Length: 399
View 1 (cartoon, rainbow, N blue to C red):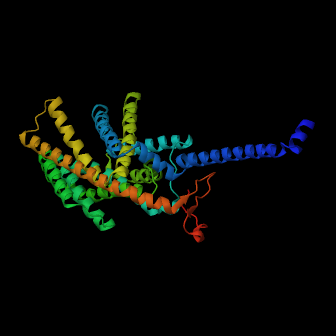
View 2 (cartoon, rainbow, N blue to C red):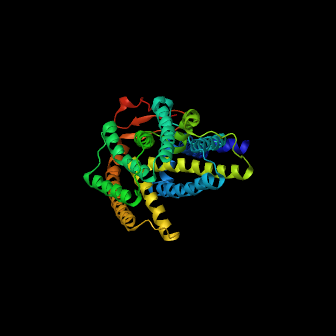
View 3 (cartoon, one colour):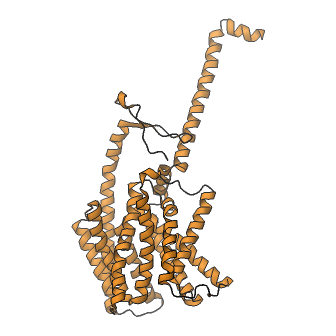
């Protein structure tokens, strides 16, 4: 103690005190840095804004569209096995199993804190989520009925009609316009797909009414998925978690009306059940990849991707399995692929031009706003540097 007291009281006392203060200052800075890191990690993994940034960072348009393409091809093979080899001829019940399996898988993710956080309930009205869940069930159910009562050609014509319906609906609902070059390209794509795939047009009054009734829910379904993710902080999994129970409810109502009897008497052995569960896994991946693609691109881009899948499957059958679709169908497929290439080029060009304008805007905003990170679930404060009277305002974006 004598040595320590002499240091503090003697000529080196000031240096000793400065040494202690410097240590305390360093410890304080280290603590603040740790808290800032902790708050940043909390924002990235435990808020809807952070989850949305992670989805945009790791799953851009090319990744989402490629993921959706391969999963769609896989579920076609899985469903052919289920409805062909297994003999499970209950399409609405199969869709119901898909959505129940998806909900169970998401519940497991939520139990392990791996499910992304949903935005605050005030940010999205329940009516929007309810509408999305309802149109999802009607879109799937009416598509199955249309395929059952119509020829493949008429069904494909109904799918092609979804494209102009989306253009018209987005203009009516959101005043969103499509450039003339894109309109011409979409018309070329639709004509090419029609020539390639529409080989028979057997007309059935009931089937035609169902096909026409299916077009609007299918278009609205894609528009809502895309709009809710792009206008808010919704991620694909968070939106699926909120809407899947609503879809399951409507499937339970539609299944007795649309499916043939005999579901309970089906042979639920291990082999058949395993095939159905594989199809259900692909169903979850298809729903997830479709939601990612719609969130990363647009409803129109997703429709074009669906038409691209149809053309690729037809050409694969021609090249691999030596099927003969005919010279006219091959010419239509080539025209459609050319139109899709031009549409993709136009989309990338618009994205590049929009990306060039975005950085200048973000730099201007960065000089005006300074955001405080969220620590332990506190609401973030947005403090303009230039205006002192606005420093007490708080942003209401915290979950």
